[in-house]
Structure formats: structure tokens, C-alpha cells
Amino acid sequence: MFETLQQQWQASSLARAYEALTERDRLVVLGLAAFLGLVVLYLGVWAPAHDWNIAAGDRYQRQFSVLQWMRANEEDARAAARSSAAGQRSGNSSMLTRVSSSANRAGVRLTRFQPEGGGGVAIVIQNQPFNAVLRWLDDLARERIQVRQLSLDRQGPSGLVNGRIKLI
Image (cartoon, rainbow, N blue to C red):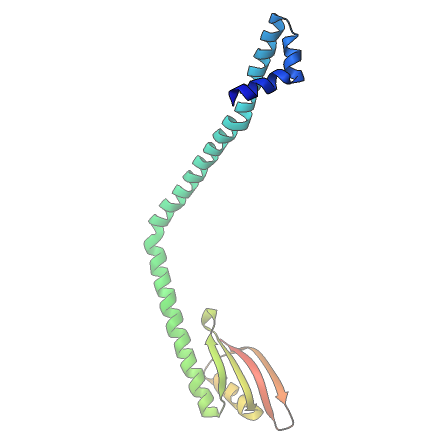
């Protein structure tokens, strides 16, 4: 393999031009080639690797300081999460219970209801009497449950409605 490379080099025009140079010019060309090789090695390998190493060290320091802050505040965050989760669970479940029982008393059948963030409840009703829905919403207002969003659509001339209701 080395012999074929040497034969290809000797057959090239670059090798012929190099052989035509004087001994002093050949040393200058070899010196320049070595210098260019070192520049390419520095700019292509060493500088990017060094810059990456510095950036990685900076990222490590930032992440380490975030980790230290998280460890220092871990107990406070856990306590806040526990109190928030407990408040939401009890608030949503009691609101769901109140809304469901109020709907039963008013004769409104809830097609779908689900808790929402912030303690609210989203409700879907289908084919329910309009007057019963209004009575139910009035009962909810008396129980201090507010309607945040209401959308009712009439279903034919019989007084039935479909709707989406968001309560808080």
C-alpha cells in the first residue's frame, strides 16, 4: 500500500515541481507545510475542543448551582406541593359533589363533568329542559358556585338544550 502511494506521489505534477526546487527551497516548502499542518490542527481540533471544554465547565457550574438551590429549597417545595394538592383535591371533589347533587335535585342530567385547574369544573349537558337548567344554575349561585362560562344551544322546538358550562 505504501508503495502504491509512493508511486502515485512520484507521478503527480506536485512531486515533479517539488523535485525541481533547490535544496533550500525544499526546506522552506517543508517548513511551510509543517506550519500549515500545525495551524490546521490547532484551528480544526485543539481550539474547538478547548472552547467546548470551557463551555461544558460553565454549564456544569450553572447546573450545579441550580442543584444546590433545589436541595436547599426542597422541603419548602414539597410542603407547598402537598398543601396545594390537598387543597385542590378537597376543593374539586367537594365542588363536584355539590354540583352533582344540585343537578340531581333540579332534574338535570349531566352528560360529562370533570375538574379543571384552579378548582373549577367543566360540565356538558345534552337534551335537558331549559327551565330545569336555569333553576339548577340559580341553585348553584345560591351555593356560591359561580358560572365562569356558559354556552347553550336550542335543540328543536321542545325546549331542550345542549350546553357547556364552566363553574368556579
